[in-house]
Image (cartoon, rainbow, N blue to C red):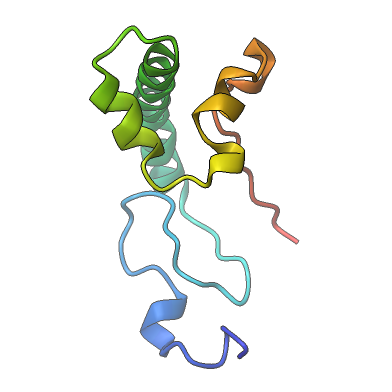
Length: 104
């Protein structure tokens, strides 16, 4: 199935300026400088949330939280990439996500 054939036109383009979305786009779309500034102003809050989530996950892996926290975070992860796998990762593997989009 070609995922670009079944969506309706309103599913292909964003209708609001809340930030990056997961809506499909068949071609790049440009945002106004005002909207770009709005996205950039939210970035510190997003990064803070991501860092808090990463810190919580690492604390759970290090048994610094209630055991239920780690079970909840890893609850549907296959054993091959479960708790043991994550405990063996090096510090360099625990980084914040990086996303970018090209204009071409």
